[in-house]
Length: 150
Image (cartoon, rainbow, N blue to C red; front, top):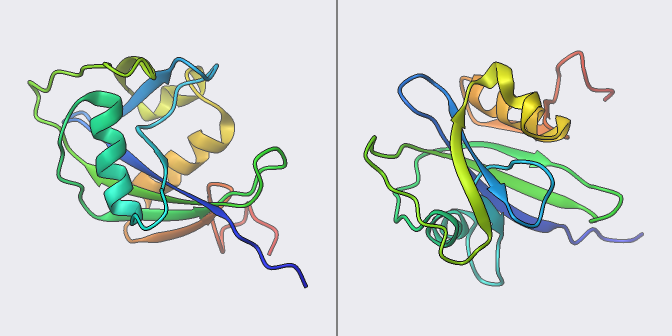
């Protein structure tokens, strides 16, 4: 038996007063993403989320509750566990993209996600924000829903 050693990542879903989701445009991807990244050795997913937001947006934020954990293995990246947290930014927040990793950030309506990002991230964001409680996902889909083969 081979034991899985998944990569662990943490992301933050920021929403505004219109329930739009903040997306960032990384300079190294061809699609928009949520702020976040991989957890380093000895770092909790929550601390990684805080660090990644500081690095990507130039802001120190207070991370809210965990929205979901997504089991999302990818053929080209291997097994992954993705922790999604919530947070809010003040309306006067000013982003700085000093490390060059992010080119732009903007709030996007949930029904417009497909115009900006890939299907699996659209599913992950929707499942996380629409669930009333902490959610376990596989490939962005809530387990037990009709969309997943158990």
